[in-house]
Amino acid sequence: MTKSFRITMAQLNPTVGDIVGNAALARAAWAEGKSADADLVALPEMFLVGYQTQDLVMRPAFVADAQDALVKLAEDCADGPALTIGCPVIEEGRLYNAYYTLRGGKIAARMRKHFLPNFNVFDEVRLFKSADIAGPFTLGDGPRIGCPICEDAWYPDVCEAMVESGAEILVVPNGSPYFRGKFPIRMNTMVGRVVENQVPLVYLNLVGGQDDQMFDGGSFVLNRGGKLALQMPVFESGYAHVDFDLTDKGWVAREGDKATLPDDLAQDYRVMVEALRDYMRKTGFGKVLLGLSGGIDSAIVAAIAVDALGAENVRCVMLPSEYTSQGSLDDAAAAATALGCKYDTISIAGPRAAVTEALAPMFEGLEADLTEENIQSRIRGLLLMARSNKFGEMLLTTGNKSEVAVGYATIYGDMAGGYNPIKDMYKTRVFAAARWRNANHAPWMKGSAGEVIPVAIIDKPPSAELRPDQKDEDSLPPYDVLDGILEMLVDQDASVADCVAAGYDRTTVKRVEHLIYISEYKRFQSAPGPRLSNRAFWLDRRYPIVNRWRDNSGG
Ligand SMILES: Nc1ncnc2c1ncn2[C@@H]1O[C@H](COP(=O)(O)OP(=O)(O)OC[C@H]2O[C@@H]([n+]3cccc(C(=O)O)c3)[C@H](O)[C@@H]2O)[C@@H](O)[C@H]1O
Ligand SMILES: Nc1ncnc2c1ncn2[C@@H]1O[C@H](COP(=O)(O)OP(=O)(O)OP(=O)(O)O)[C@@H](O)[C@H]1O
Ligand SMILES: NC(=O)CC[C@H](N)C(=O)O
Image (cartoon, rainbow, N blue to C red; front, side, top):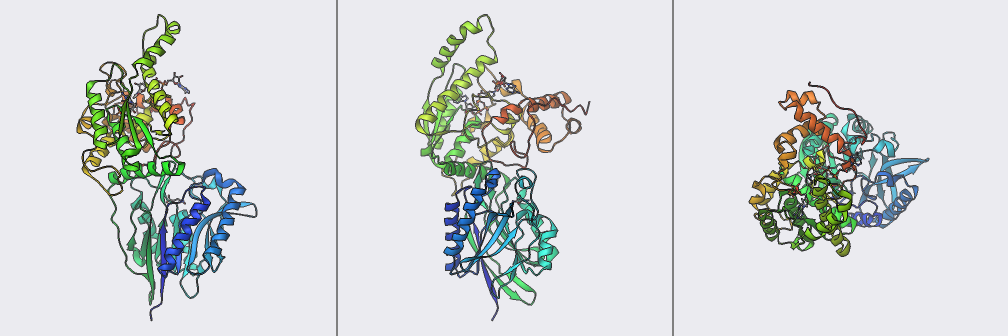
């Protein structure tokens, strides 16, 4: 009879700090594996405490709680498959990112991470000690299993050492967050490990949102030679049972379901929806509100909110001034109707007159300028935050990455709010995402199918409507030019000379560079939002606020 071994891959969504809740998810996964006659149930990196914990993991009391829960989990899962799960540990006063095998009521093995990621959103060198590479563990007469923990599998060394010391299957637990285009990089890297070592590999990722990061799941199994045996979907919690048969070539995974990957725009939109949904659920909120201006940014944020939370949990408020056009009033109402969400109108004329009157003695003899424009934005922020306080609806901000990059927003005005779903999406892509949402629908969207963002909103030129006939292009270069320069300066760390060589006008590039640097203080005080690129504002790109350096190249 062929010898076989079944692994249940648990691609689940833990919550940072909810050790009790995460342990309950782990027990449910173990029960699922037990009823499927699995030999091993595997959970991702740091599952018991959630990921990323940042400095929380440096609290000894937190690690002690996690270790107590680990022991309890082992006892609860005694009679059935082995369970592997990530959990931090302090040994000899040093903190490690560890991965445990629980079996027969006890801790049967523990592996600790060797390569600590310390780039982009990762700071693991600051948090953990690097451990020596561990050998594989064995379960009865099953395969010897090596567990390189996430970053450990991104370089040849750990996998090679594990296989040299007898590992027959590599099970890689991951906490690998999304950025656009990351999946093929991950897949190619894992194929590399399989080809180098000639053993099958189980890649198991977390799913779900944590602050700015979205863990996209997409777990898979590769056979020798790098052939895909099984592919789990992206962004979905779920289980997959994979059977390995012992053949004359060693252990081979049986072919399973192979989910297809959505395209980049579909994945970006899904990240914005799931990140908002998880941010709300995990922080304990159920309802949101936002200012709906009749423009594209607030319209797409409303659509994302409806898809994440359901129309009944989204309130849109139009706050017109004397500069608000009839077109904006009509477009905002049409967007709210198309989305089916709550819609209110509050005029800012009264509060604006009151503020103008209060300031009149102090501003006597001075021309009206940006000050008065921004007061409108701040009154909107004040009114929206009052509604938020009174009814417990979290205020969403609506600045896209182009605006966030150049500081084209009013601090304490339209920047007021708790979460910004489009923070890492450039304006030109916001238009594409709006068109994509109008043309596509999926079961994970709580909103209805069809044209939820009126085309009139997509087609008109963007305007802040803070003075008569204002257009964004009066203050900024056209968005296709601005976004092209920003992609280079922000996402690719290109020089001014590089931008000039790419065909951009040097004066425009220098202006954009200047705006990026002088608006660092605004980003420092801005709401978090989901990371879509590997150069999102917050952890991927950390700049000083005080900074006199400018790039004089390309002159
Ligand atoms: N380094 C620094 N550290 C700390 N604070 C700093 C600072 N530099 C300036 N400041 C302070 O920041 C203030 C200037 O910032 P802020 O008040 O935001 O004003 P500001 O950036 O000058 O103006 C807002 C801009 O956003 C545009 N906009 C676009 C779209 C929508 C909206 C909207 O409101 O709906 C607005 C608007 O047209 C205008 O160009 C200064 O008064 C100064 O006190
Ligand atoms: N008349 C208004 N009623 C309600 N909210 C408004 C109004 N004007 C501006 N806001 C809020 O302030 C944000 C910034 O708006 P503004 O229209 O000035 O610039 P924008 O970046 O082009 O955004 P949008 O595309 O949503 O108009 C809007 O997204 C909206 O949330
Ligand atoms: N948790 C980790 O070690 C993550 C690092 C890894 N290279 C990734 O993002 O996939």
